[in-house]
Amino acid sequence: MTVRVRLAPSPTGNLHIGTARTAVFNWLFARHQGGKFILRIEDTDKERSRPEYTDNIQSGLTWLGLDWDEGPFFQTQRIDFYCKAIQTLLDRGVAYRSYTSPEELEQMREKQKAKNQAPRYDNRDRDLSAEQQAAYEAQGRKPVIRFKIDDAREIVWNDLVRGEVVWKGSDLGGDMVVARAAETEGQEFGQPLYNLAVVVDDIDMQITHVIRGEDHIANTAKQILLYEALGANVPEFAHTPLILSQEGRKLSKRDGVTSIDEFRKMGFLPEAMANYMALLGWTPPDSTQEIFTLAEAAEKFGLERVNQAGQNLTGINSIGLTVNTCIKCQPRSWLNY
Ligand code: GLU
Image: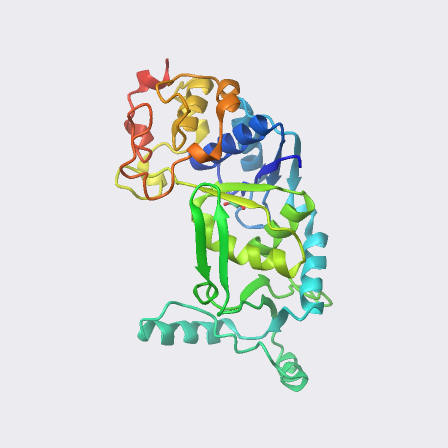
């Protein structure tokens, strides 16, 4: 089996340090395993995606010394694949047209909130009769496509960073929307959504290992159900800890410099940045080694030495920095070696 991994950034902003670190781990893993590293631009969010961000992501990766073997592929050029998969789900009876209006969804959420319940779709359109559907169509309602999620299901996978992860179907928010409503006359359905597109692409691109931030764990549970429904093999998953601010929160603009571009403009050397990011969450086998090139790190890289989420707040890595250390607080001299 040839290892195939991918970086799948959304071009809705400049290359972020979190995405860059995910890229570093994917690249190191691919190079260590003699595998392939694929770049896929997830640009289906038309409002927020911009070509200049795609350029920034590519030039940022190149600046860091991360080359890719295939791509960039663009999701907006692959819509037909997603539509075909949605049709397959409909044909197999595991997806359906859902006519619940935004106002009705809002009411549903309000009621759940009043009862202190987590927001979820109540699956009310799962078993509509042909007459009910026709009545909704006659009202001019445009359906979204929902994928059925069995509340009784337990989704289990052996995460290569976190070990066994168990997720309850009932915690996934009810049947999930995989395609928006059609925008133009004659269209079967509208824009395919993230979880569906990712799974279709990862199947088509024969991705063997999905290495990404732990903010995607709930998506992984949903995606495993989609792999099964599409009759595909489920890849391995590795969820890496996020880079957090000093306060332990997800890094945001408020925390100062977060894009690779800004670090470059401030004069940091690409080798130092790449070195630093490799050590944000990974400990080399010889934990006294602090300074190395990416190629040297690739010789030793393995996911078993990536820190588990939850340990990162107190976990000290080999250079004596907590993984969640706010990068802007580091002495510049350290990065400018
Ligand atoms: N487009 C997603 C993101 O930028 C990628 C998620 C994934 O790696 O599957 O977060």
